[in-house]
Image 1 (cartoon, rainbow, N blue to C red):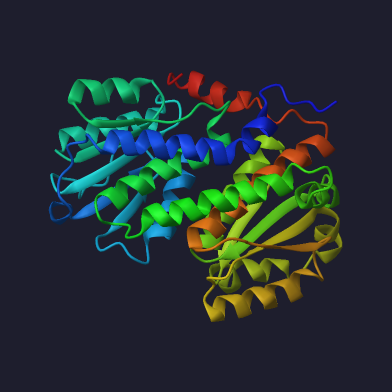
Image 2 (cartoon, rainbow, N blue to C red; image 1 turned 120 degrees about the vertical axis):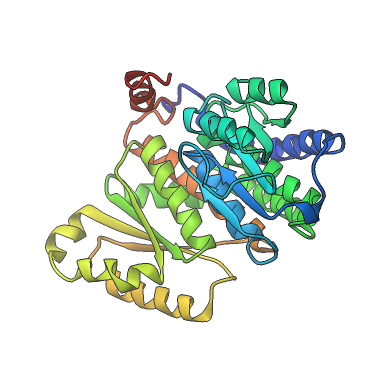
Length: 344
């Protein structure tokens, strides 16, 4: 009997269907939205923390190669000082009540920015209604971390709608198809996520990816291990880690081999030098951690491969929870912290 009080496994398995719902809901809203033309937007701010912050980082990597204006991911209270009437702020909060995001939207409105709110029927939606802002609801899920797709898709479609993500509609379609294909493989009795989780066991996972897309996904894997499996986990990206963190593996191998296992996230869009550095990192880590695993992204296009790895990581973390007899759902300490500082 799997301990899963919130239905996190079912939520992960519903990812492709949730993406389809998000696509339809977002397009319906954008068709009626009063947004400024492309040429009147000088910069874009993606405001979100937690899963929404990860969605912002992933969106930055997806549109980075084509977007013609600066795009900043803001993971905190308020908004950057440069925000003004020429700024588009995309604010994401799954519940609609994330204190940092509500504060950011309030300040962005005061600064005269165009604001698009993505999330649930909380304070964010109330502000959107009061200030006549564009607001996009997200499909239901038991927790934000189970629905990163529901936050990412509306934001991507918004940028596509405004001309900042050329071909975005097709890239999203291909991503949805890949997520469905990966989901079908991961719900099978004997699947690679379960196999990897069993090998990780009670070790502390370290997740590495190439800079940009791989690094953003590695950070999400880390957070999924933290929240679903309730285990300390760590993430970094190449080439940055080869300039500092790699030095830390030079001693204490007798200890690190017993404590850590490493996961390398690979995709087809790695810079050649980054790919070579990751290969060297693997050679080094084999000597100092329990095991090194490599996970290869699948799918057509960068977005599809990132979302393929996202879903794989979610299922790995859920299966680690099973292996360690942990309920992946509740994260009471997060609510406790918010309550203790008066933001619940």
